[in-house]
Length: 295
Image 1: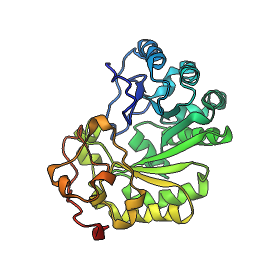
Image 2: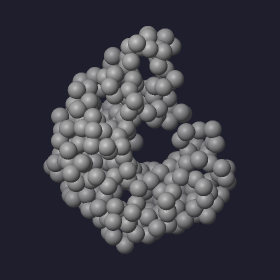
Image 3: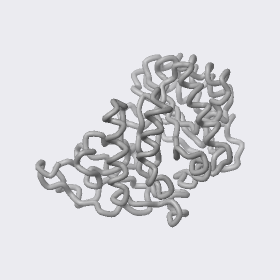
């Protein structure tokens, strides 16, 4: 797989480490493949790390599932820390491998305070989580992983990918997080990218953001009222209730970010995440915010 060059001006510099995954998430935007790519990509990424600008603000590690590298992942993070000591590292993982407390300890220790672990929770109900993850026991292993990371003092970004199968439980999930996962650094509610499985299985999984506004509003404000850090990714401001504008982030990678022509009239465009150019279609309901009073 050809990787993009690391660019100091980009908001998304990522090391793609494998196309393999031990989940088969029903809405995955980059479906996994059965391939033997770990060793070749590892060597590529070691060279990319060595050649990266020393003042790079952040670098991502993604797949597939990065923890399938095993202890090569520890070595990869160690190389980043050696070559780019001031660079933040954002590791995207389903969290299941962190059920192994020794592996978790090694990952957190080598990353020190520069490592952030982005881990998805698809539901507070195990059956729904496993259905969405496409793997039996995924919920149990991910939950064990989350607790092990917390025990080691790791930094966790908890990710909720919003879809047709979990939107009705947003508030239940927020209450579950408050009660059982209060140690996470922040919770991110994430809009889907309509490509890969999210596109091919859209009848089963896809839902427009305008259809879950109320559920999202309740969940976000519940967490915020209890002083949890919370964010919304990948949802344009015009598709959110006004009370959620301050939680929305410009989260879409610059290389796949675009705006509709109608967005040129929007007074909030500079603060809006825009849309995925990789999606098969834009979200329904995009309309410019014409006045600051509309906020």
